Amino acid sequence: MSDFQLALTNTAGLSSVASFWVFVASNGMKEWKERSLKFASTIVLVGFIALTAAIIARGVEAQRFPLSNLYESLLWFAWATMGGYLFLAKSYGIRQLGWLASLTAATMFLYGSWLPAKQHEITPLVPALVSYWRQIHVPPLIVSYAMFFLGGLSGMLQLWHSGRRASLAATAVTLLLTSTAIGLGTFTTVSTQWLQLLFVGGSLVGMGFAWKFLDRKTQSENSTIAASQTSQANTFDDVSYRCIAIGFPLLTIGIITGGLWANHAWGTYWSWDPKESMALVTWLSYAAYIHLRVHRELSAEKLSLVAVAGLLLTLLTYLGFNSLGFGGLHSYGSIKDQ
Image 1: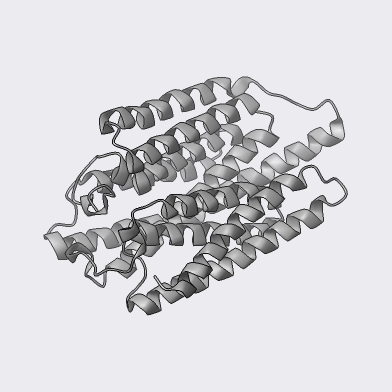
Image 2: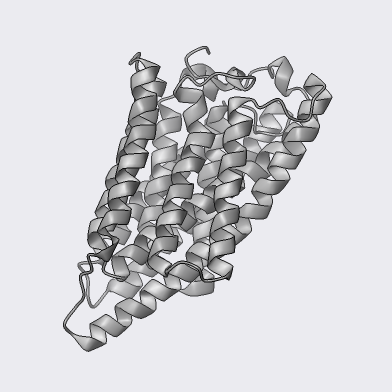
C-alpha cells in the first residue's frame, strides 16, 4: 500500500471518528445544533471524498478492480455507508442518522485496521477470485449490505422517536453481542461453537425481548414535543423502507450473478453453500419486510424490529461466516487462515 493511499484512507477513517463526536456533541448545543449537524455532515463528505480517492488509488496501484479481500470490502462498505447517509441527509434532512452512520463507518475502519498485514497489502488474487465475475458480483452485495445497515439503524431511531425505549435497548444490546462475537471470532482463538451460540442465541433472545417490550411506550407530556416525535418516527420509518428498497434489488443482482459465477467456476448454479444459503435467508427476510410494509400488515414499530432483524442477518452473511467458522466453499475468505 502506497503512502498516498494510506494517507487518504486514514483521512477517511479520522473523518468518520471526528464526525461521530461532532454529531454527539451537537445534542448539547441548542443554539448551535443545526450548524453543528451541518458541520458534522461536511466532515462526512470530506471523508467520503477521501475514501473514494483511496479506493481509486488502490485500484490503480493494484492494476485491478480493488475488491478482492475483506479489508477492501470494508473500505467499500464504509464508502457506501457514508455515501448512503449523505444521500439520505440531503433527501430527508435527517442528520440525526449521521452519528450512527459515522459510528458504523468508524467501526469498519477500526476492524479493518486490526486485520493481518497481508490483508492491507496488495497481493496476487487467489485462484477462486481470478474472474471478471468478481467486479460484477461483489459490489452490488457490499452496497446492499450498507443500505440494509442504514435501514436497520433507521429502524432503531424509529423506535426511539416512537417511545419504544425498552425495545430499542434490547436491539442495541443484541447488536453489541453479535458484533462482539464477530470480533472475538476474528481476532481470538475462542471456540467457534461458543461464538456461534453467542451470535445466534444472542440474536434470538435479544430480538425476542425487543418484541416483548414493544408495548412499553414512553411518551412526552408536552403535546408539541409528542407531535414532533411522532413526525420523526414516521420519517425514520420511511427512511428505513427506502434504504431496504434500494438494497433489495442490489442483493438480488448479487445473488443472481453469484449463481452465474458459481456455474462458471464450479459447474453448478447453486450448491447450498452456507454463505449462499444465508444470503438467500437474508433475501427472504427483506422480501417479507417489503411485503409487510407495502400492505401495511404490521405497525411501524414492528416493521422496525423486522428491519433490525434483517440487519443482524446481513451482519451474519457479510462477516459472520468468515469469522465464526461456518466453513463452505467461501472459506477462502477466512481471516485466520491468511
